[in-house]
Image (tube, rainbow, N blue to C red; front, side, top):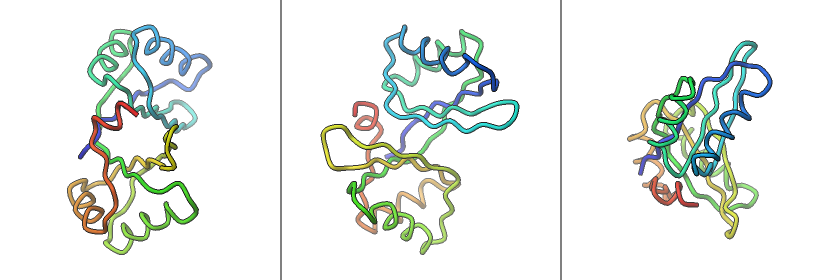
Length: 143
Protein backbone atom coordinates (compact mmCIF):
# COMPACT_ATOMS: atom_id res chain seq x y z
CA UNK A 1 0.00 0.00 0.00
CA UNK A 2 3.00 2.30 0.07
CA UNK A 3 4.04 4.32 -2.96
CA UNK A 4 7.63 5.13 -3.90
CA UNK A 5 8.23 8.80 -4.60
CA UNK A 6 11.34 10.24 -6.24
CA UNK A 7 12.81 13.29 -4.48
CA UNK A 8 15.21 15.47 -6.47
CA UNK A 9 17.23 18.30 -4.96
CA UNK A 10 17.45 21.23 -7.37
CA UNK A 11 19.46 24.40 -7.36
CA UNK A 12 17.05 27.31 -7.36
CA UNK A 13 17.99 28.65 -10.79
CA UNK A 14 16.38 28.92 -14.18
CA UNK A 15 16.28 25.77 -16.27
CA UNK A 16 16.87 23.12 -13.59
CA UNK A 17 13.24 21.96 -13.48
CA UNK A 18 13.11 21.92 -17.28
CA UNK A 19 16.25 19.81 -17.32
CA UNK A 20 14.66 17.17 -15.07
CA UNK A 21 11.50 17.08 -17.20
CA UNK A 22 13.57 16.77 -20.38
CA UNK A 23 15.69 13.92 -19.01
CA UNK A 24 12.64 11.99 -17.88
CA UNK A 25 10.84 12.58 -21.18
CA UNK A 26 13.83 11.52 -23.28
CA UNK A 27 13.99 8.30 -21.27
CA UNK A 28 10.30 7.48 -21.68
CA UNK A 29 9.46 8.07 -18.03
CA UNK A 30 5.96 9.41 -17.42
CA UNK A 31 5.32 11.80 -14.54
CA UNK A 32 2.08 10.93 -12.75
CA UNK A 33 2.21 13.70 -10.09
CA UNK A 34 4.66 16.27 -8.78
CA UNK A 35 5.22 18.84 -6.10
CA UNK A 36 7.92 21.49 -5.91
CA UNK A 37 8.90 23.26 -2.70
CA UNK A 38 11.64 25.84 -2.69
CA UNK A 39 13.85 27.91 -0.44
CA UNK A 40 16.23 30.68 -1.42
CA UNK A 41 19.00 28.36 -2.60
CA UNK A 42 17.41 25.04 -3.53
CA UNK A 43 14.18 23.21 -4.11
CA UNK A 44 12.87 19.72 -3.54
CA UNK A 45 11.02 18.22 -6.47
CA UNK A 46 8.84 15.29 -5.46
CA UNK A 47 7.66 13.04 -8.27
CA UNK A 48 5.47 10.02 -8.72
CA UNK A 49 6.61 8.37 -11.96
CA UNK A 50 5.82 5.15 -13.78
CA UNK A 51 9.40 3.81 -13.52
CA UNK A 52 11.09 4.81 -10.27
CA UNK A 53 14.29 2.80 -10.69
CA UNK A 54 14.98 4.15 -14.18
CA UNK A 55 14.13 7.72 -13.13
CA UNK A 56 16.54 7.53 -10.21
CA UNK A 57 19.27 6.08 -12.41
CA UNK A 58 19.03 8.61 -15.26
CA UNK A 59 18.76 11.61 -12.95
CA UNK A 60 21.77 10.48 -10.91
CA UNK A 61 23.74 9.99 -14.13
CA UNK A 62 22.87 13.59 -15.00
CA UNK A 63 24.35 14.79 -11.70
CA UNK A 64 21.20 15.29 -9.64
CA UNK A 65 20.92 14.25 -6.00
CA UNK A 66 18.01 11.80 -5.95
CA UNK A 67 16.31 9.77 -3.24
CA UNK A 68 13.33 7.49 -2.95
CA UNK A 69 10.80 8.07 -0.16
CA UNK A 70 7.76 6.01 0.76
CA UNK A 71 4.44 7.86 0.83
CA UNK A 72 0.76 6.90 0.88
CA UNK A 73 -1.77 7.56 -1.89
CA UNK A 74 -5.34 8.06 -0.71
CA UNK A 75 -8.32 8.17 -3.04
CA UNK A 76 -11.27 10.41 -2.19
CA UNK A 77 -14.33 11.67 -3.98
CA UNK A 78 -13.50 14.88 -5.86
CA UNK A 79 -16.12 17.00 -4.12
CA UNK A 80 -16.29 19.58 -1.35
CA UNK A 81 -15.37 17.98 1.97
CA UNK A 82 -13.39 15.06 0.55
CA UNK A 83 -10.07 16.36 1.84
CA UNK A 84 -11.58 17.48 5.16
CA UNK A 85 -12.82 13.93 5.87
CA UNK A 86 -9.32 12.50 5.49
CA UNK A 87 -7.60 15.28 7.45
CA UNK A 88 -10.13 15.08 10.27
CA UNK A 89 -9.60 11.33 10.55
CA UNK A 90 -5.85 11.87 10.75
CA UNK A 91 -6.14 14.67 13.32
CA UNK A 92 -8.57 12.68 15.48
CA UNK A 93 -5.94 9.91 15.64
CA UNK A 94 -2.99 12.16 16.41
CA UNK A 95 -1.30 11.78 13.03
CA UNK A 96 0.70 14.73 11.76
CA UNK A 97 1.01 15.31 8.02
CA UNK A 98 4.64 16.06 7.13
CA UNK A 99 3.63 17.15 3.62
CA UNK A 100 1.05 16.35 0.98
CA UNK A 101 0.03 17.12 -2.58
CA UNK A 102 -2.88 16.06 -4.74
CA UNK A 103 -4.06 15.46 -8.28
CA UNK A 104 -7.33 14.55 -9.98
CA UNK A 105 -7.68 11.39 -12.05
CA UNK A 106 -8.44 12.15 -15.69
CA UNK A 107 -11.31 9.79 -16.32
CA UNK A 108 -12.98 9.59 -12.90
CA UNK A 109 -14.51 11.80 -10.26
CA UNK A 110 -11.78 10.96 -7.78
CA UNK A 111 -8.87 12.90 -6.34
CA UNK A 112 -5.64 11.27 -5.21
CA UNK A 113 -3.88 12.69 -2.18
CA UNK A 114 -0.21 11.88 -1.62
CA UNK A 115 0.79 11.97 2.05
CA UNK A 116 4.08 11.71 3.92
CA UNK A 117 3.88 10.72 7.59
CA UNK A 118 6.48 9.90 10.20
CA UNK A 119 4.67 6.61 10.84
CA UNK A 120 3.28 5.30 7.53
CA UNK A 121 2.08 1.99 8.97
CA UNK A 122 -0.02 3.71 11.65
CA UNK A 123 -1.48 6.05 9.02
CA UNK A 124 -2.40 3.11 6.80
CA UNK A 125 -4.08 1.36 9.74
CA UNK A 126 -6.06 4.46 10.79
CA UNK A 127 -7.19 5.32 7.26
CA UNK A 128 -8.14 1.73 6.42
CA UNK A 129 -10.21 1.40 9.60
CA UNK A 130 -11.99 4.66 8.68
CA UNK A 131 -12.99 3.17 5.31
CA UNK A 132 -10.73 5.50 3.33
CA UNK A 133 -9.28 3.96 0.16
CA UNK A 134 -5.51 3.62 0.02
CA UNK A 135 -4.17 2.96 -3.45
CA UNK A 136 -1.37 0.46 -4.07
CA UNK A 137 1.74 1.78 -5.75
CA UNK A 138 1.19 -0.09 -9.02
CA UNK A 139 -2.19 1.58 -9.50
CA UNK A 140 -0.78 5.05 -8.82
CA UNK A 141 2.20 4.55 -11.15
CA UNK A 142 -0.20 3.69 -13.97
CA UNK A 143 -2.91 6.33 -13.50
